[in-house]
Image 1 (cartoon, rainbow, N blue to C red):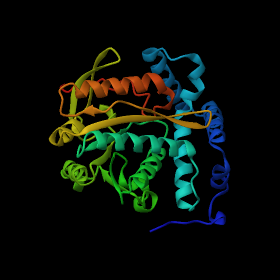
Image 2 (tube, rainbow, N blue to C red):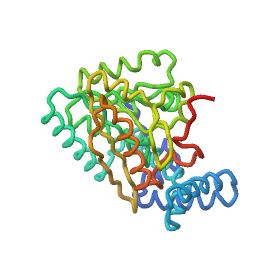
Image 3 (tube, rainbow, N blue to C red):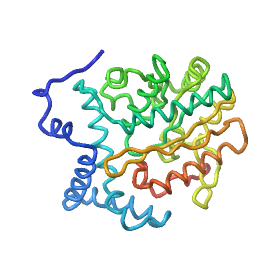
Image 4 (tube, rainbow, N blue to C red):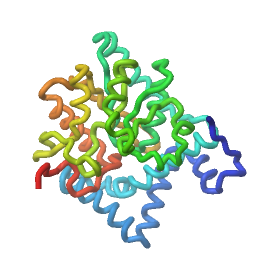
Length: 305
């Protein structure tokens, strides 16, 4: 199933967004936040809370203030751009993401060559844009010659407008919030790892986003204090002695970039702390791009009352 809209069916601001360069989208996000924050206190304080948390916790420099405050607007505009390209049937041209897909492909090929039969869980962190990550996973799937890649998604099915097969045709999305799917989610990930030796899971999800099952965490140290991260990836990965390959996107001056971390052996006792170290390094390196930033607790969480 493919969805295709003509120019006349698109709204004027959608056509405008499709014509913008990536740098133009970044500038529009800054202008949009600055304008809206003048009249909307929620927009203004959400942006300032993001910046103040980074300033207090990470000693964030003043020069990043506007980019940090406008990160939510940039994410929405980029997400909308990727969706419009897919819906309108427009060819996507994101050479920076193509380079990232090639780098991930080379890393996976090297791991499979050095460790034959070793399953790998690829872990994009929540940076820049989730739809950019979806685009990236689809390009990687094509390079690997797979029909589809299993991706564990925390985005509710309804947010895709029930068109996920059209919007992400090469990805098999496994939704964490589906009641009918929750009990079988781990089994489906294991099946994908056994079949394709590859699955995708966002391992940096913080406890405050675990709305229904908040106790699925494990203790680590992060940013110089006790913290907790989701333990599901370790429970699943340890059964097959899988590797975790974390990475995150960056975006600056209209260009995508990426940071790829060393693989983590999930069956080892030190694996949770190694992942926590990667999350902290990503946060310190690219805080303005972190789309789940701004919550007062972040990874601070008490497993007992």
